Image (tube, rainbow, N blue to C red; front, side, top):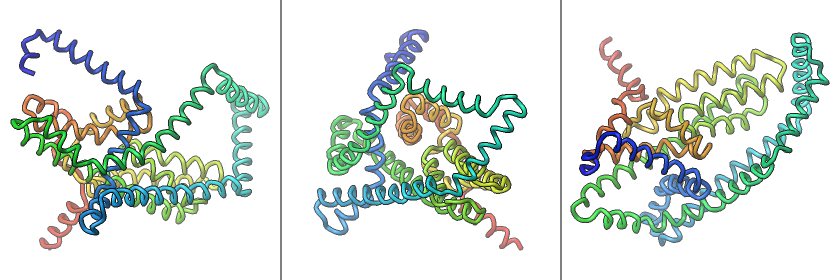
Length: 368
């Protein structure tokens, strides 16, 4: 770093720009291998408490403890997907939903005809042409097939990668210590502890938040009167793995469903109001309280990072980028020459947590 400062500013900026472009290009080219690997890292942190309990408390051999942890996770995930698929199948086959959807679409076509003078036949023909052009366009069908194959490969590789990461976790830690050498051993130990602590807290915290939101969404949609609240609750809660955008965008699905498949616009309005409210609660109270704030990321930098992650790796990139930026911030905060970057990535402690709300009312109670 000191040697780099000897060069003119334009040379340093050129070097940084070239290095950034090279890294992003490499991430894009190797995404089919790297993003399953990155997701496996998150899953290994999620399953580490279970594997550690089975190994050290229940006295299972490590290979068996890790295997049980991964298999248990796969069983739970498969069960959730099975419930979701069954509910979606029932939704698709529901004649009442089909009838309401057909009537509402006809009403929409008549609205377009009355205001834009486009007949329903012309609208249907236009939609057919757009659908045909999408699949007939050169390379589109091939790209779609490649994406499906890549997703299947990722699903197959992620549990395998997760197993080996948990099984060889001690070797990974020793490798970092050997790489750091004796003069940097204390720094390496600090980084390992902080990164592990924050990553575990983030991954488990986000998972708990998603589970809470799944229950909350399902109950709220049931009370409002939306059909199939469980499937809509599970689908919309899964969006919350994507910070900021997830909870906001998730409301589009049930609102669109109620507008198309049900004949009461006030239900759609109630759903929209609920998702706006729960989004504010999630961002300002729920996530800060459960996920915690060991690493306070700048919201602006976080949003930019999510956009870059979506550009580079799509949806997996949006999920992975926040813990990745948190790791980068920890590294920057512990290295003197990189502390300015850690400062710009962070923000002062804040956020309205459940503890702060409780303390506020306790103080008010004592004053009265």
